[in-house]
Structures are given as structure tokens and as C-alpha cells.
Image (cartoon, rainbow, N blue to C red):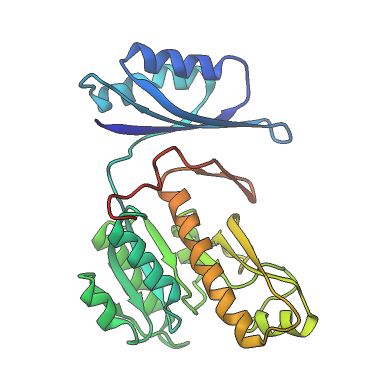
Length: 294
């Protein structure tokens, strides 16, 4: 059975949900899951609907026919085939925990993506990437060759048809031009939960301050470094008895989980940009299931 998702953003007004539900029903579609949010501060309305059909529907016809309903409410909308995997490019430097976690989740079907390339500024993970039948590109980055290196990166993205770039601990700052060109399509994992602990070694700072929670933040990349709209966050408890190296090890586990959840939300079209913030709807039933789990 074909499964689809409809995402809608518009100004909040009466009758939106009824109009969408009636249109889908009239076209032989059955709504299996629905989530919505009415932002009282901005007046914006956000909705995501999963639907299927027992009939052989023409999704292109359903898509084009929806324009009349959409125009009535001034909707921005998209129809998505949920059986079609999103093409993803992963970028990594010398910390491989997130990369390995993503590749494993992809292999067992827990993260249904098509990894079309891995790009790194080092050779550390070439073998493990190639052994997973994924193309590997080593693109060195220096202050002198940065524009050329980014041009090569974007060439890989465009040639593969990638819809998303994942910075899996890629330790290079992207240019404003690249951030703007790929706006809303680059996800980063930031190895810090508390905003006061920024920089290259937040776990050491957290240790020195005696914190009881450490964590990680996954966000969209913008021209403001580590200030993009947040998709996912999590923490883990620590005690006075743990060392800075314990913090690093625990932190890496949280980073991997947070990044995977952020990717899962994005590829299932559950994330909506709302100014400097995001609306993240809950996962649809069955979207975490995999035939190779358990």
C-alpha cells in the first residue's frame, strides 16, 4: 500500500482541517495520522497528515487538484511519498561515533535514508565507509582553498541529488553562501546542551563547573554559528565522581541519539520552520519500525 504525507503551513483561520480532510476523503484517501499546531503568537498554522488508500490513486492528480483548496486558505503545501527514501550526504572529520551510528541505523532500516556520499576533510573513515558500499570523498579544507573546497562539496551534493546534508561532527565552519544556498537542508550536531558551554571543549567546562546534566543539541545550520533553529536535544545525568573523559564518552552517546532523532524527524517531514524556532510533530505510528530490528 502506498503511503503519503501532506505538510501544510498557512495563516490560522477557521475550516482548514475540515477542508483538508474532506478533500482527501473525496479522493479516496484514508488519514492514518494527523498532527497540527496553531501558533497564537504569530498566527501561523502548521499541519502534517499521513494518508494511504485502498484504491489505486494518482498522487499527481491528488497533488494538482489540491491547489484549489490551498489557494482558498493561502497554503504552502507539499505532498510526499513516504516510501521514497531521502538522499543524504554525511560530512565528518575525525570523530566517527555519529557517522557509524547513522550508517548502522540506515543498514537495519531504522533510519530509512539513502546515503549517497560521505565527505570528509580527513581519510580516517574511508575504509569503513567504502565497506558499507557508500562513495567516500576526501576534500581537504584550508583557509587558502576554502572556496574551492566548498565548490567541490556542492558538486557532490548536486551530482548525487542529495536533499539533505548531515554534519556528523564535521569540524569546519561552512560559508554564509553555502548556509544560505542549503537553508533548512543542513543539520548539525552541537556537542553541548547548555548555551554557556560553547567552544571546542564544552565537556571540560561542564566538568569544571560541576554540572549534573550534560547533553547535545541538533539544529539547522544558519549563518549564525550554532544558533540555528533547534530540532532535537537531550541530556544525561552525571555525578561528582565522574571524570572529564567520562563526560566525553557519555556525551558522544547522547550526540549520536540526538542527531539520529533529528534526521528521523526531518526525513519524515515532521519539522516545520517557524521563524527562529521549529515545530516538531511526534513520529507517526510505525515510522521507527524495521524488519531487521529485534
